[in-house]
Image (cartoon, rainbow, N blue to C red; front, side, top):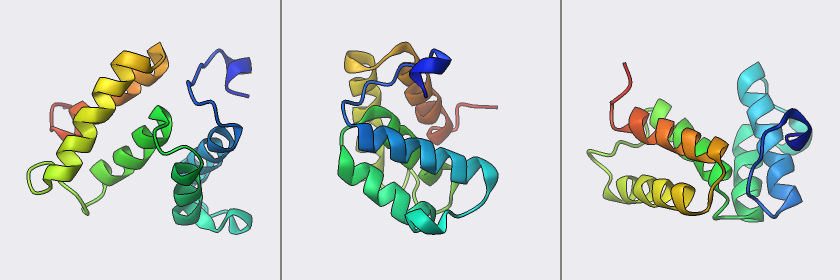
Length: 113
């Protein structure tokens, strides 16, 4: 579905791509999919399917950046994870993934107005 829309994501895992789509749909619609166990379970399954997938990490870290659970000022691991995501995106990612990783990095660093 993503390819048909002209959006390339670099995951080699069909399961990770499918779960990314499912998680994004749940987030956008503000509704939990009972079949998938809701957003938390979908997120866990997506990360488990391919832990290093760029868009999986983008959405996971993006949700954390928008919430109140983690902060780069208080959580060195989160800061390191964001830095690694950005490096990986620019090394291995598609144009789409690079722009999203950069946006999440900027948001987490309070560089977005």
